[in-house]
Image (cartoon, rainbow, N blue to C red; front, side, top):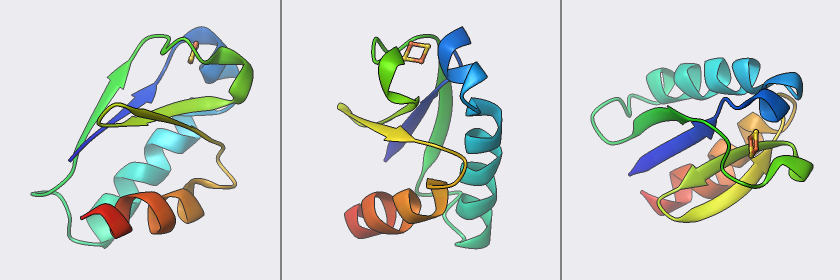
Length: 79
Ligand code: FES
């Protein structure tokens, strides 16, 4: 699975750095380094909706507060 987190300027302002850190931590904590690839990208064209995170071709809006739930509900369940 490939997760792409937006680090464009609009998402940066909304906390993309904390989201990326959170995703990294969750991937490590859940022992998923071999299964989940985390990449960064500039603007995913979804700026209005918070930090954009893409799983394969689907875009989600994540914030530092929701990254944990996002991981549980959208990442773990797809593996
Ligand atoms: S800056 Fe992240 S979607 Fe545009």
